[in-house]
Image 1 (tube, rainbow, N blue to C red):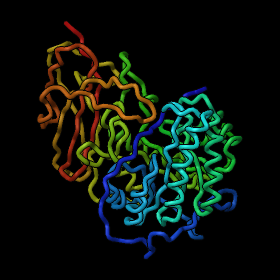
Image 2 (cartoon, one colour):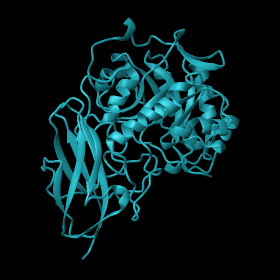
Image 3 (cartoon, rainbow, N blue to C red):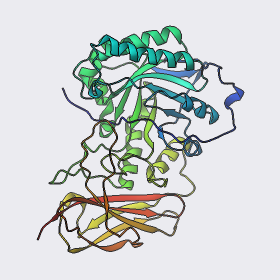
Length: 429
């Protein structure tokens, strides 16, 4: 089968206090969420009214999401605290259960393993099904990733049917990695009780409608992860380092992808959750998160603000035109000689004329080969050029041969940053 690799990781969040209460409801007041056929398509309704949400996968500060117009979050594992936090911010929660995938050691022919997992799900549902922030139940994230046993979806269906019996107020779904016709066929046959399908696409966002047609999926769906073109989808250097787009290229792709494949299809697409409102290490520290490690917002957040509010934020993030190392771009396979000096340049502009500062960092190339967003260690940082506050600097190639990356960060002193990196390979003399 064709393998698609997407994001999965433990859900962590910083709890931020907030005193407001949505719609004067109290915790325990159930909101009925349902999918209705409308014309030739489908719509999500909440308490009898059409519900359109601005969603994000959250791994950070919920108040910043609210400030930019977000009103719904998704999880990757069950978490009762996030329901209360979302309620305080007048948000809804697409609650995903951690259903152990085959690649993490689950055997879906082992009844004891399945029952133990099912009991955990039951307990959480019974304790939280009436929470006013709850939007939907997701039974497992990317269970098709590297799987060999499609009977996992028999178990998904069993859980779905039980949830629907005890909680008729919230729809059920499961999230799959990309849209593979074989996987969709298994889900249609093995898990017919699901109310909608959740799909997670990165570079494939631009061909999502083609994939859905090829899979003969005509029912409602959500796009529950979408974002940067995946490291597995981008070209690599001659030594196998994936080439990452800079922050401005990513922002352009987010906007174009949304306008092409999500916005025009509201008759079938019930909603979407952008990935990732936070920061994480996955191949690089900048590939998938919309924030940097210290909390600066990248240009993609400008795009999401525009999508959600139909206007750009008052102060914009710097744009990054290009980055060069030894007068070469990343796609040109940059080889350096150990101990020699080379010039690096970054070319930027700022919408607001803000004064810009720069940080340069050399890191060893990541040797992690994790899949599905599993935890990765941050590669080792080298050198002493982080304080080089200039758009053009000289760097000295490391003495040890091997694969590295040069990162540049451009700050506007207003909490925003552009970024880019170039992989390079050091040769001995």
